[in-house]
Image (cartoon, rainbow, N blue to C red; front, side, top):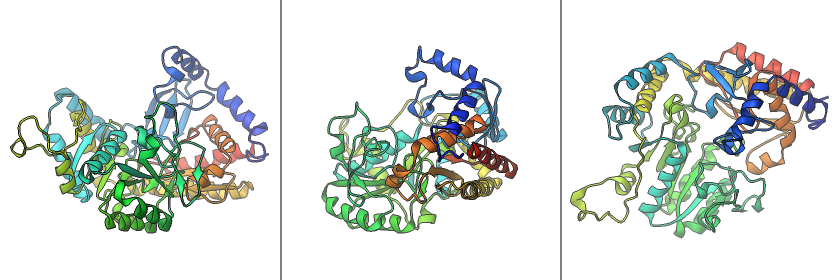
Length: 460
C-alpha cells in the first residue's frame, strides 16, 4: 500500500506512530515550550504536525535530535548551510572574530572587504548594503524602488514568498486563489496585516511570459517594481523561472522604468557565485541575497544599480540643509547590520567556495536526489512531480507536473505530508512544507541512503 493510495491509512498511521515513538524528548520539550512560546516555537516555519524535532547537534550533512536519533539532513537550516554544518573555516573565522569584537554598531573593514568580494562575483550588485535577514533585504529593495520611481504598487508572482512584510504575505501561502490563471487577483494570506494591503500588490502569473508582461504594461503608471524569485522556493514549489519568463519581465519593466528585483535570498551562491543573472540571461536593477552567504550566521544584503542605490541611500550633508533629507532618501539601518562576526563568517564562506568544489558536489547530489526520487515514484506507481534545480528539490504527490503555485495546490497535501513525515521518522530530516537542500558535505552514499529510505516509506 502506498502513501497515495491511503494518505490517512496504514502507511500514514505507521509513519506517525514511528515518529512519535522515537521522539519522546522532542514531544516533551515542545509541550514545555508551549507554556512560554506561542505554538511552542519562535517562528511559523519551525513547526509541523504533530510536533517538530528538537535538535541537539549538527555536523556536515547530518544532525542529531534530543532523543539521540541521527538524520541525513536535507533541511540544512532552510538554506544557509551550503557548506554543511560547522565547516572548519567558518568556525575558525567566527571564533577569531568573537575574540576581537562582536557588535560595535559601527562599520569595520570586514564589511568593505566582503562587499567588494561579493560584487566581484555578482557585478549586478554595483552598490550594496548588508542586513541580517532576507526579509529586511527584500523590504529595503522595494523601498528603494518606491523612492526612486515615486510609485507605490508592487508586483509579485502568485505563490512567491519574499519575506514576512505585509505586502509579501499576499497570494503567497494561502491555498485560496482568485482570478484566472493568467490574471490572478490578490488574496490576503493572514489576519493582522495592514487593512487594504492587497490594493498595493499586483499579482503576476509565474512562468507565463505573455500574461505577466500584459499586466505590467497595464499597470505601469503606478508600478514601482516587479520582484521575482529565480527559483520559486517554498510556497512556489521549488520551480525555477524560465529564461523566457525572466526576459519578458526584463523587457516589460524596461519599457516603463519599473524596477526589476531578483529575490536571490534562497538561491544566492546555490546557482553559482555570480547568482541567477547569467543563468537567466537577465540583469536585474536590484537584488536581495541571503541564507548561504552567512554560512549559518544571520547575514543578507540588497543592492544593484549604483544610481538607484545612491539616490535612495547615500547621505551627503552638503546636498541638503541640516536635518532635511532629499525627497528620495529612504531609511534603512539596524543595530546588528554589518555585525563583524557575520562579516567574518561571510568572508570564510567565500574563501571556501572560491577554493573548493562545493557547488559541484551540492549540484551533483541534488541532481541524484531528484532523479532517484523520480525513478522511485515510477517504480512504486505513485503519481508525483519532483521539482528543483542545482541543490534544490521538492516533491508534489498527486500531480505529474508543477510549473506554478496553482499546480502546487492541485497536488495532494496530505499525501505529501505523510511521505515527508515518514522520511523524518526513518532518519531523513526533510520536514513537511520545506524543500530539500543538498550541500557540499553530502555524499553519494548519503543520497543512496535517502532513496532507500524513501522506498521503505512508500512501501508502507
